[in-house]
Length: 149
Image (cartoon, rainbow, N blue to C red; front, side, top):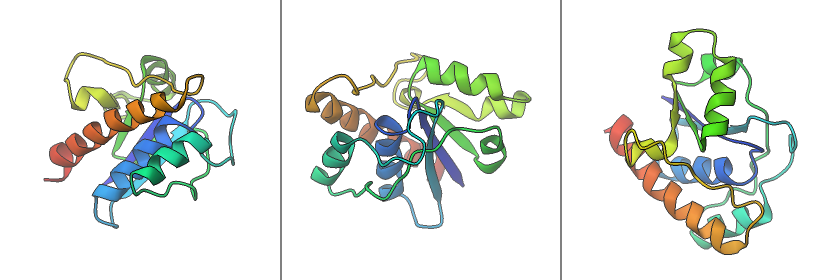
């Protein structure tokens, strides 16, 4: 089973989602993250994401941003996006219905069909990162429950 977490720049939300899910699944489960934009390719996650993860016992400092690509549809079973914009951008790259079926808004795991979005904490303060962490913690618990049990 392979999971991909996707946000805009792959330095705030998706690295947190990757770290959270990876901390909850066996090592043989592949968890990765990517961004729909190429702004931060090769960079570490935002220091505020690293800090909130560390505060909760998770180290994401080793992660490096990368851009989502069409090949990710072949490499991953499930692709979770953080917001509607990411959803649209990933679906634009889908080649067929099978690709499209892999893409889901991550918060729909908690509240199916409500299409709620994980807010981008980039322009906010540390509290926004804490809030995002809490949302993603609950969502990744649901992913484990829905896909791995």
